Amino acid sequence: MTLVTSTHLSGLRPLGVGSQQVIDGYPQLARVIESRLGGPAAGLFARPERRSDPSWIDWHSAYEGPILPLGELPPERRAAVEAAVADTLARIGTLAESLQQGDGSARFFGDVLARAAINPGPDSIYLVGEHPVLVLWGFEAESRMPVFVPPAAPAMTGATELGALAIGRAAGQSWWAALWRWLLLLLMLALLILLLLKSCTPLAPLVVERQDKAPDLKDDIAAADRDADRRAEELKSLQALRDRQLASCILPAPPPTVPAQIEPAVPPATPPKVAQTPPNTPPKLPPLAALPPLPAIPKTPPAKPPQVAEKPPDTTSPTTKPKPASCVPQRMPHDAPEVVMVVDGSGSMGEQWGGTGSRLDAAKRSIGQFVDGLPGDVDVALIEFGGCNDIQRDSFYSPPQRGVLKGRVNGLQPRNGTPLGLSVERAGRIISSKRPGIIVVVSDGADTCRGDPCAAAQAIAAAKPNVHINVISIGGESNSAAQCMAQSTGGHVYQPGNAIEMEKAIRQASGEPDVRLCQ
Image 1 (tube, rainbow, N blue to C red):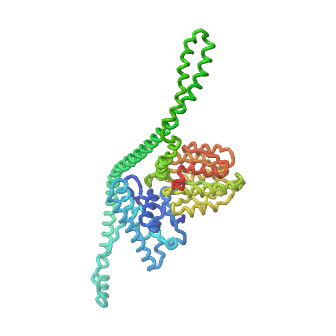
Image 2 (image 1 turned 30 degrees about the horizontal axis):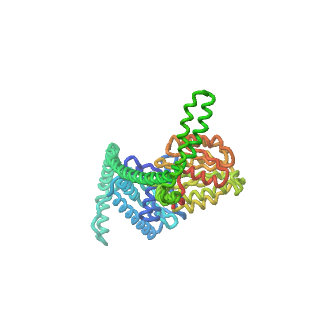
Image 3 (image 1 turned 180 degrees about the vertical axis):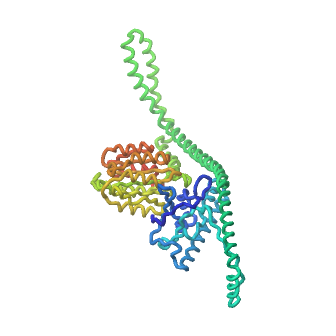
């Protein structure tokens, strides 16, 4: 991602709906705008990233190229860019109005989108390459100084204008200056009173709109009912299959098994205990001898019973068809998790492993396969480290950008140092606290840069309890740091022995299915 600019939030107030700020919904906003209006419309909004200092925000863009503020463009180019931005924001506002006509989550998301479509002003427009990018969206100024504009005089030309100017300068300059000072003082006093009143007035609209989220339960209940009906149909088909199998296979089985279990059990029990009382039991053996007629029962099936078992593939095919529906996650956009890959780029990752190249080669192949099979609603970030002070990338990649992500992964090269603690801390900083999150650490050793990955994981668990850390430990037993990171966040440690096991481990660590197998 390209860093467009960094802004200080002094004098600005964030827009929001309820207790949620508009900029926190950036991943959902970008995904919905891209699906409805196209990629260029979604690319207008720069991705916000908060620093450790909450008064600063970094704004990033997926476009690449020279960065120019709108004020530095020629007048004709500036007018064209402003017109393009206004047109895109108008289309987004129209989309927001259509969503606000609904109810539940659609109306709530329409309110968020309407606030995001407010133009912060020309100073917030940049040109990255040939693409306009908007920063400071989702914010408004806390106050604006009123500007006094004197009433326009009638149009004058020639001698009339010169005469009026001479008269104004000679006769009204002194009293006009005094009047201007008094007006400016009154305006400043009125502004001070307005700010005091505004600071005492709560933001009433932000509290009421949150209550419309309750109707979402109807959709959830309907989905649960449909799922229950589908499972009931599956259960009926399985019960019918079981009944057919029992009818064809269970009757011939009892004759050989029952005598074999009774005959060894009776002789050992009678000789050791009592030798004279058993005479009453032998007469009961002839009824058991009458059981052999049972084998004639197999004549009852009119057709060939084994061939009936060929129909279950037809009956089981409906049970296998729901696999795609159960394999591809059915969830709301805000329920889709974020996955952050922390890839060790230290020198030891260049060692041979598993007979198929180096450890880093196996990691790159496994991550590439993992990315190809991810569901389309999952955003993936890559954090690559190659030295104690060298965190090279910490960017999220949307589904259309996964080709770029694979190219970045394939370009990884072994370097020196393992700043594992710093990398885990950076992953915890960029991952969302509003959505489920998984941090997958791929490493072959402990931190060698005086960092504390265990403390970084514990800080993530305290600040973002919905985030889990899973560690892929390569080349031996897992160290104490790997165990601590996983245990602190409710995650796991995986120890693959070769490249195939590594690919499976990364898939399990992410918690997401391979949608390519759902076709």
